[in-house]
Image (cartoon, rainbow, N blue to C red; front, side, top):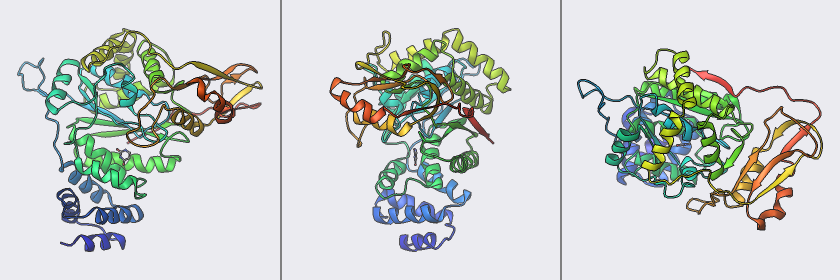
Amino acid sequence: MLASSIIVKKRDGGELADDEIHFMVDGFCSGNVADYQMSALTMAICLRGMTARETTTLTQAMLGSGDRLPKTADQDSDSGNNRRVRVDKHSTGGLGDKVSLILAPLLATCGVDVPMVSGRGLGLTGGTLDKLESIEGFQVEYSAEKTTELLKDVGACIITASDRIAPADRRLYALRDVTGTVESVPLITASILSKKLAASLDALVMDVKVGSGAFMKSEADAMELAKSIVSVGNAAGMPTTAILSDMDQPLGEAVGNAIEVNESIEVLQGKPGEIRELTIALCADVLVNCGQYDSQEIATKKLIEMLDSGQAMERFEKLVSRQSGKLSGPLPLAPATEITASTGGFVNRVDCQSIGEAIVSWGGGRRKAGDAIDHQVGIRVHHRIGDPVESGQTLLTIHSHPADAKDYATRLGDAIEVTEQAPPKRSLILSRLP
Ligand code: URA
């Protein structure tokens, strides 16, 4: 088999056979297929696409490049050899998306394990690991053995992917990042699912974000990605569902790192609103899909009980302390300045791009991989689209360092558009799959 012939076949719109896909991925990992050949193939896939069968094979080949996390025995079962049910959620990422911090401990209180392998922020959307590292001492690197211990003790962990989790994806993603080949539904599907399959999950729920603060700006693109992930996840033996959720404005009020941990704690302590609503919906979906509960209604009732009784918060504290974090009250933030409304009316638009860019430029996010993060930088967005505001009311609270003050008005003066007419109400949850 020749790599160049396989590239030509895909370039000309052909459908690759399973052994051709394995040849390319295995060769890429062993050094028999050069980086430039793999880059050419990914560009051909970007332009020509892949069938569901090809995408499933690509996912399996990338999964096969590394190890799978062993299943954990259920200590409570009579026979001692029943496995504990294992689930996870994956989000395509969006401004202020802090759901993972609440969802992992909340699911654990419902008796399932959640080995959550998370990422760091790059670009405008923050990463769960960066947020958690706002907590003094919090550790994210664990071996497979230690991960199993965390799961046994807490039922959940939030960690970084080890070198042995789908290494083909790690290398391929680095190539795609610099060759204009990130935006491809089959490549994104294989990238996400190879890592999730490596965790040996019994069910996965995807949160596919749609809007100006997300990777997928249109509902049609988000739906295409969701359908691909749901179909390949199920074909690969991992029951998968998806929720499409609105990201035309940040999720919740807080955007940043420490500020998002603080808001997550508020939600774990009972704060109502869209973060709680979306977290419960995602948890209920995956708990029914893995067979833990018979219906969404039963699952939702249990989840509300776990939040309102404080058990989810206790589990979060256990997770933090087991991962060496020291948490005693709200995390400190940089000094606050407010931007107020110059006229009254209704919030018509929230400029996610400007908010994300301002945080990155003040050190709250990375301009390039490896940059250090100032965890205390953040922004509180006080209103959601459609909310009434009065002249002089606070629109944004900015937590930044005084040297950045000259930038506030230019960067964020128009970030919240206020109009006389109220815009139409929009739903948080746009659709569910399947
Ligand atoms: N997230 C991933 O893990 N992979 C992609 O390709 C895109 C987003």
